[in-house]
Length: 453
Image: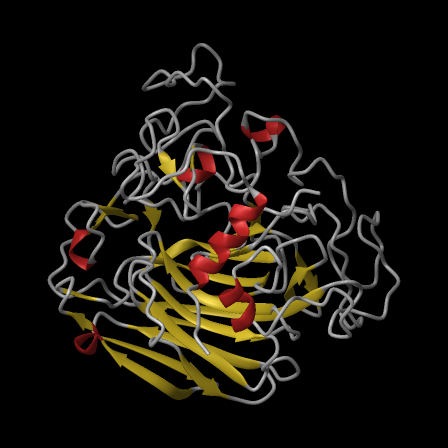
């Protein structure tokens, strides 16, 4: 059975839920007024210019904000205090190590990635990028036809390294990789393991400039050599080689709106009345993510700084990556990498380096969400609250020791639940159950906007 690029599959889902916005590609760059091309192929400002912004299809190389450099750490996923909603995060990695879309929930000292009916799941994405390193995720997966759990590294150039778990086969993990989103059906190799839903495993991606190794519970299962990826047609190594974000996602590949190949790969259409759902949700559980950063490639100079990655060319290969002290933050959801200090709500005495470009229509500010953001707190152009859809929600946490399916708690509850719910809350995450999630070209990463009923 062929495996389809996570990026392509997620783009198909995203296209279904968001018909608005100017399209972009390498042959059709974004216009100056909405200069940033999201990983889903639409132009915008604000969050469009942060993680996932595609340098190849944006207005210019400055449109996408520089990316925070790698941060070695053992992230215990037992709290949402370190998670910011994509409707709030403006690029400052000191405020959060993870950005969410969809609804992550705390349960038994771990984070649940949840997926309820009429949603496209949950995505957690690291705010720091990895440019070679060893990244491990300790987790269990979801189960059920059409349901996909993913742990991937996804670059803005669409280099991708995957562990993917198709819900109708919990005895294997699919290892895969892509170079700049180019689909190659021969890249996927299944790795046998024990039940991924009921057994906690640690999945590791060990990525160097020359080799890439997938391991499960410390046992090396597959190694790829860069030397073996030479493509004579393009005269390039089709090997992941650009800074990437860590992404954890749960998404419905088996939606009727997706392509026949994607649905077939995922085992069929999602059953929204499955016994594998608890409390009305599919879920995967992540307890720990460990990141060990490696040094930049041999011969790489850091004379320009050490805080942010950026590109010197749209070619997007290893030798076009630079490191500097570039600012990674935006002043508002109207700002861009070309005009990072622009804030329409700033006082007249504020310092604006440039005037805002003329905009004939309200620009898209958060991929998958028209407008998006919390107007009261971050100057986003279109109203809405931190939940992203106008809902107020309720508790988003579960007490340790409770069974995720044993409580009668409901979505939008007001708190006090002994089990997880997918309503909003005070956790700082996007509380709207209708907000999407995913991985990029699964894409990592996908999980962006939700199906708007």
